[in-house]
Length: 311
Image (tube, rainbow, N blue to C red; front, side, top):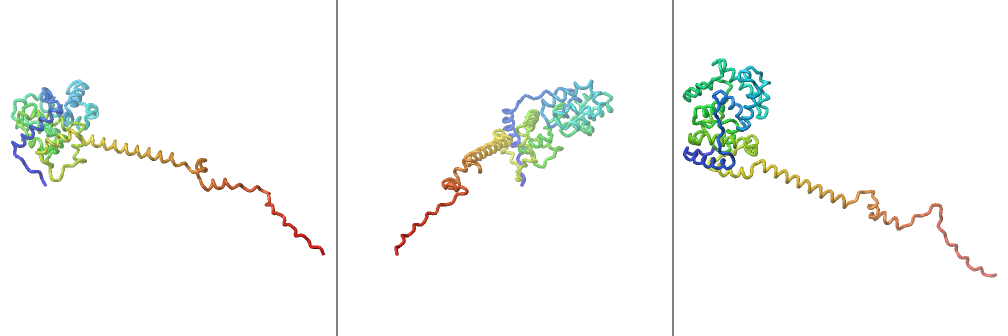
């Protein structure tokens, strides 16, 4: 059974409630995305499936670890990998970074893509799509930042969180997720919603809740109208806390069982001990009956002779 579809206006009203809840938990201050176009693309590769702060650290480490973009372009994948160890998928990120730089250098003979700012959404999208190593998230994030396009960039973590909330169907693909999500908010709210959705999707405390492989969605689908209430409940009692409570209970039960077993051992003395010998009725009875001395015979009383009669 699939969840019922709701109108765009109702969807946007629900998302306003979600934004209000998310602003209470996370910072509503938008990250500064003021880099040149090419660096925006490279930063987006660092940002995928991680937090803004982690992406900034990784990107800064990349620029500081090499002389310039050209040195990064001619470096090996293994040389670049170390920069991405903190955010995972190090080899894949290193490959994409180098591929983008190689493509731009071969096409432009420089590392400048600022003319993209003057292009239409369709033209810029085509140019980015030609870079085969770019994911849908990197393309949509770049278009949102550079052109202010009405998009909600979605990576795998954002997609899972969106499915959990009911913002997109359970079978939504990463290729179409961004277009589906943009109908949830107005264009003016899209950047803030994208930021808060990333904060939610990358929240370590909620990682277990959004792990749809281990915590699958209900078969009957997810009701978006219930999303604000479900979100509040999850904030109050996420699966990570539930697991910790369950673990503590198990430890308490195990500790009580050990203490109880220890008490039983103290009360029941081990066999062969002196205390056990004293309390054993069979041994106690033996002590009351004195043992016979070896080599002694039992005295038999002599029979009295009957008096002889005189003849």
